[in-house]
Each structure stands twice: as C-alpha cells, then as structure tokens.
Image (cartoon, rainbow, N blue to C red):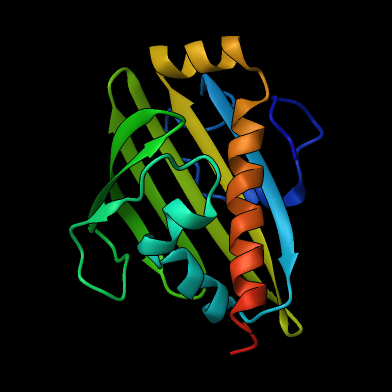
Length: 172
C-alpha cells in the first residue's frame, strides 16, 4: 500500500488512468493498493458492480449506495450516491469495461474524488489494482486528522472485494 508521493509506487500505478488534477502528485489525499484474487476478472468485476453489497462488505461505506442504474449494477454514465467516512458523495461512472476496468468521479461538500479499479488476468487469477484520490478542504481535513485514512479506505475496498470473490467461487 502506498499513500505518499515518491519513487516507491507499485508498477501498476502507471497503468491507472489518473485524470488531470487527480494524479497522486496533485491530490490532497490518495492511496494505491493491489491484491491478487483467486478468481477470473469477470467474476471479480461482478462483485465490484454489485452496489447492494457495498454497505455490507466495505468497511468505509457508512450507508449503502442508492443506484440510479438498473441491475446488473454499474455502467458508464450511471450515477449513485453513498457515504464514505461520513461524507455524502454523488458519483458518476466514467469508465466501465466489464472484466477489466471501472472508474468513477464523485462530488460531495468540499470534496471531489476519483476511484479506479484495474483488473489484470494472471493465469486463473486476477491482479486487482485500486487507485483512490481526493481533493478539496474535506480531503485535507481527513488527511490532517488521520494521515493513513486513504490507505485504510483502499485496504477496506480491496479486502471486501477479495472476500466476496472468494465466497462467490469466482473462477467463472
């Protein structure tokens, strides 16, 4: 887990599509993490796209998202709202490539954030990379109050997705 700018970023960091203003070098709060999951990318993606499981499985989600999208869940341009660390945010999916990549932007009071998932097939397994970046006064306040909060957010998401994929039999 890497949550500070520097040369120790994982190789996968370069594979993420950091948008202008949300790269780690320009964000007020960010983290990158990865995990290796014993499941096919399509199965892992299915767990990511299951909005209803977030409140149950992701420790940093306070209330489950309410999706404007119909099942099966997320798609490009779908919108949803959720609470992250007590902050209400409204998100819009900017990139949704089933089995490979999912990214969204979210806005809240004094906060803008970007989150991207990259799924890489690895001989019956999936290497999952997650990038999280936030800007604005709320991001600065969170960083100052808890310098490791972004890392914990990323760890919570990765742990939850790995657990769901393992429970779901994810070999697909």
